[in-house]
Every structure is written in C-alpha cells, then in structure tokens.
Length: 509
Image 1: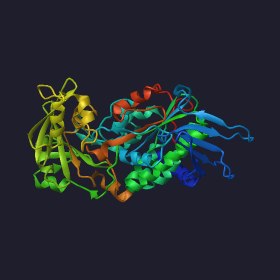
Image 2: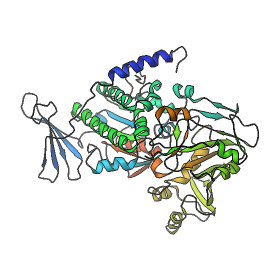
Image 3: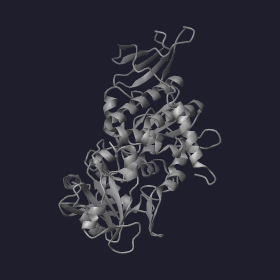
Image 4: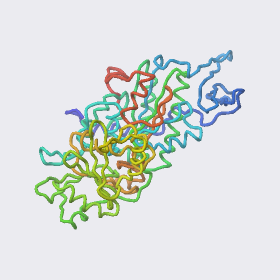
C-alpha cells in the first residue's frame, strides 16, 4: 500500500462497487447441452444453444477418452459452420490464460473430471505443495520471485526481537513478491471481506478476470482468485465443488468467445482439509509445563507463537524447541512436531522420533524410536530397488514418486525446506494439528464464524492440489517448482512484466 493513500475511503468505494455489482451477470455458458449424440469414432457430440433461440449453434466433439478436441460454430447467416481442432492449434499462436485458485484439494478436481467436468483439459496432474501449505510460499515456489519473509505476513523478527504486525505487510505485498507476475488480482483491501462475503468477492473477481481476458492478445496472463479461499474456508467441500463448477463454465465461456483460439491452465496453491472442529489455543497448555507465551524472547521459558489467519499448523519461536515440543506433543490435537537442530531436522510424534539429514540433494531418515512419518516400509522398498545409498541417503526423485499417495507426500524435502530454504525468518518449531482443528486469530475466527475447512499442515489433504491445462499432457504428479517448466514444454513462461494489461501494471479492482 503506497504512502498517502486513504485505505478507509478506498475500502468504502470498493465495497460499494462490489455490492452494486454483486448481482450483475457474469459470463454464463449453458450448464447443459441441448443434445448429446455418439460419433462414428466412439466419442460424443455435444450440441449447445448459446443464444437461447431453441436452435443448436455450437458443437463440441469429444474423443473416446472424453476430452473435447474439436469445436464447431454455426455461421451467423446460417451458412456453413466453422470448425477448430484444439489439438492442431499451435499453443504459441494463442493467448495463454493461467487461472490460479486458492485452496483446492486434488481429489475434488479428479472427482469432477471423472464426472465429465473440465473436459476442455487434459487429465489433471497432482501437485504437491510446500510445508507449511500457504499461498505466498506456494506461489513463490511456482511462479518465482523474492523468497517470502515468513510463513505468514505476521511474523517474528529475531533481529528486533518483536512480532511484526501482519496487516501492513500483507497489504503492501512484501511477503508476496510472486504477485508481480499477475495480470489480475483484486485489491488486497478486499481480502478480509473475501472471508466474510466470499461469494460477492468471487463474482467480482470473475468479472475482473473476464475483462482482462477480453482485452488480451498474445502472451501469457496469470490471474488469481482470493475469493475461492474464502468460499472453501466458510463452506468446505460443497462450496469448493460449487465454485469449481463455476470456473469450469467460465473456461467454457472464454473458449467459446475466443472461438477456440486460446489455451487455458487451471491450478492451485495447496489443498484443504474439508473439516472444521474448532480453534485451538496453546497458552494454558504451555503454562502447565512452565512456559509463558510472550511477544518477545527474554528468557528460556518465553515462547512466541504466531496467530494470524486460521491454519492447521502452528509456528513457535523459542530458545528451547525440544522442550516446547515435549509439552505440545501432550496436546490431543498435535500430531507432529518438527524443529532444526545442528544442521538437521528433528521430527517427532507422541510415540516416535526421527532425524532428517541432507547431503548432495538426497535425504536420510533415521529413526531413534517409532516411525513418526510412517516412512520405514517405503524406505525399505526403495532400498530393495537400489535407491538408498550405503549411508542411508535416499534418491530424491524416487522418494517423491514413492510417497505421492502417502499420508505425508514428499515429506523429507518439504520439512527440510521449511527451516532451511522456504522463508527468510523460519520458525524454531512447527507443529501439525489433527484435521478439523486450526490455530490462529481469535478475532478472525469470530468474524467468519469459524472455519469449515483450512490448510497448512504436512498431510495429503492439506498439501495435494492440482494442475489442469489445455496445452498438452503433464506428468501425473509434480512439485510446485515443476509446474511452470511442465507448461513450458508447450509454452514459454512469462517474464515479470509479461501478461499485463495497459501500462504494465497488475489490474486491481
């Protein structure tokens, strides 16, 4: 936020426009075809009436796998129709729209795809997010930019020994350098509103996105929706499914308006746990073990915890991470505790302790007792395959592929990065919470009436999200850093200033 702005006045104006525009129609592709027929090749032909004159004027041909491969448009004068083969079109010759959503579980996208949605796209790829699974962290890994300051905008600054308030950092974008890549993102002044009235913000965003898409020529344009985060947090599974159906029809509308001469990619930053049981606080629990929650570290028993938003992990700053972990693991809602120690990372559960080490891009997992990440059977199989060296270090790619469906996907690399690579101000200790429980701001929790679903922790539900693209086939599973290179096989990645509308500035409204 620039100095000299009047955010209060801006917010009033934005909310007025939002409310006035809340009931305006957004591009609305027909929900159902008028007719479905089987083609001679064993595919299907869908016929649509887009102008509601009781006559089909637009057809889509699906191949035997169920993907839409050809579009047919009726001529305005009733003459011969025009046809576009989506697979024959050179991706570089058409604009590429990347729609970045916030918090979409892979399983829901895969379910909708099986039901016949998103059939303009090749089958979905699973994308494994970072840990903690947070938007700014994930999209920085995916799109690039300066490494975030911390896991969230509100964070603890060790140099000044104080908590840095989050709102100013959030509004300024200092923790979200990746947003420089965007062609559209609604004003950050609307982000809190996105969790109170998410449906209004979401529709506002859809109109803003369509404005960008209709002006676009060549190049790649990345747009982002924060309203989807609010919809998922408030409404959980059903709300996510509903907005995904809306996004599917939005893509259909774009392709129809562009007469098929466009490529679209859909993706998201992390998953969602789709359960909400309540918000947990640790002050009294830690007090029982002799620790004191504080806003600064003045002694060995002081603990700083960041409470911002509502997430399924908690980050602590302390001079005694092992002892604080001892205390927190006694809580019935804590599943894992992780903390760095002498260039390694200790991972603990109530009945297990292991140490993660890194050497030459490979990771080892040495258990002292138990198996907190449930990896021992996986590593035993990889050792049988020759993927583990004599010192216990595991081939990084092999471990990723072996844990794609595991409770904790790609866990060693993600945990390591959380403390040594992901942010500028890493925590001393991170704990994961049982699904359904969240930690964060009491004020925010009150304002939105509690979270029906949220994200952040290490497990599959929280971290597994998706990639769908019209460009071509992508690998079945990807890390965040691999998404843009995978798309780059078909289309060059945008530069920081590419894909912008007008004078090179991200559109915010």
